[in-house]
Image (cartoon, rainbow, N blue to C red; front, side):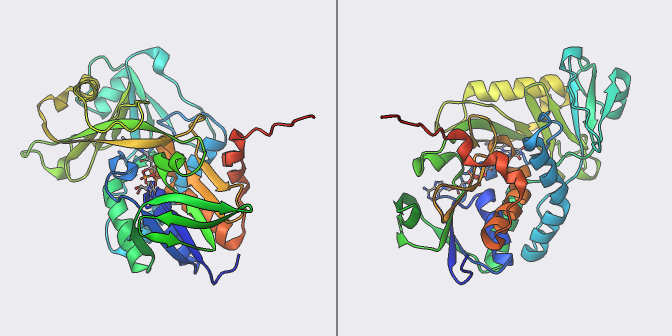
Length: 368
Ligand SMILES: Cc1cc2nc3c(=O)[nH]c(=O)nc-3n(C[C@H](O)[C@H](O)[C@H](O)COP(=O)(O)OP(=O)(O)OC[C@H]3O[C@@H](n4cnc5c(N)ncnc54)[C@H](O)[C@@H]3O)c2cc1C
């Protein structure tokens, strides 16, 4: 592409920012326009980096997730060194306690670390679990990042790199002759040489691509004040039956999450919070007396096959990076790097093929 021209990214969540940072580092002049920097999936996420605990089956999606997990240590180091702010990255491992043998599923893949802890071992290793727990897998390579700290660090890095960040709402993408002409926005009409759509759950408002919201409710608790954060009762994530419990180093405990396909319906509900607390207290009864800190919710950008939509679109100058569903925090490094390589260096990683939007497009042949 003509490297003197601008790139405009629509959407300033983790995906838009990861692409913006990678492009700017390669020498591009990037602008990000975003409607909102608070009520976004990125700020709602638990931040688990959990391709193994999520039991993603072998295939391209697992390949992409594992590649991103492997990129994480260097990637957060880069963001932190630019911004000077921590990201809360913690490769703490994830334990998946189960109540029944039938739930003991795991994909035995080479080069991946996993270990089954039997009933005696798991209770020894993690005191305080429900007596119903009969064992669990421990995935030492899975981990977590504090998605809110990470996002603040990325915003600061973007500013440091002189990426232009505009608060504004794109109302229409003007298309002509197979190209994007301009964007109609709440802050006037904007033009660029190349555009990236990274609008998460709201993507379908701008283009007919199959991304829809799956709401997730969450809450956080605080460890009692007489327990030192140097001696946290949980030293790894617990990923149980319809619940996960994510300890943060500062003493917060994040509990998630509901999965509701009800459109963009705001707010926490009594039933949602009851479900979260019921499942979490059943798994780790110690939580019963912990104080509640906060409730919140967010909209995961879901797709029909639960895989992201990445890469070229049917417009020459528009690249898609959306639909990351449950794994957008995990997939931020690989998305940023592969999409920046594609746009700026014309470097196409074959891994992108499985994620092209064309998998949802059928060409109808009409015989007259
Ligand atoms: C409850 C919950 C828990 C989760 N837990 C995890 C987890 O543990 N691990 C993990 O990897 N992932 C997790 N996720 C998923 C992850 O949060 C998402 O996949 C990821 O944040 C998606 O990032 P995004 O940048 O695509 O979308 P968002 O963060 O939602 O950002 C989209 C941006 O686009 C902007 N926008 C939308 N429309 C327009 C428009 N027309 N004009 C201008 N701007 C627009 C929005 O304002 C927003 O800033 C979780 C999600 C939820 C909701």
